[in-house]
Length: 117
Image (cartoon, rainbow, N blue to C red; front, side, top):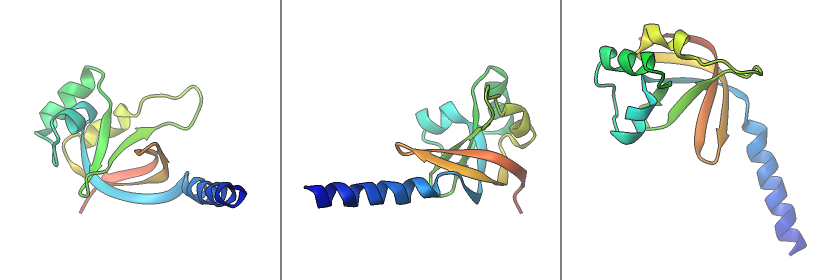
């Protein structure tokens, strides 16, 4: 029992060590609600993503392997990241920053974002 608990603690520590690691991702900027509710693999259009963002829906980055990254601010109080993503709405981007994972969800603190080549 003690050994199992020790192994679990070591595994959890290894997983947490990667949280906040610098990574680069490439994917599509789209409305987070559509990414989940419509199961999209690419955005419907730039206009659609912009319209949803203007209504307050957070924009997200959907990678080609289906992982959705929510861009976040690591400052407190945090601010929304839609303003940084709006120029890329509906487009493919490459983003770099600290990546966090929790309970299967993914987030990225954007250091840089550029149109993908």
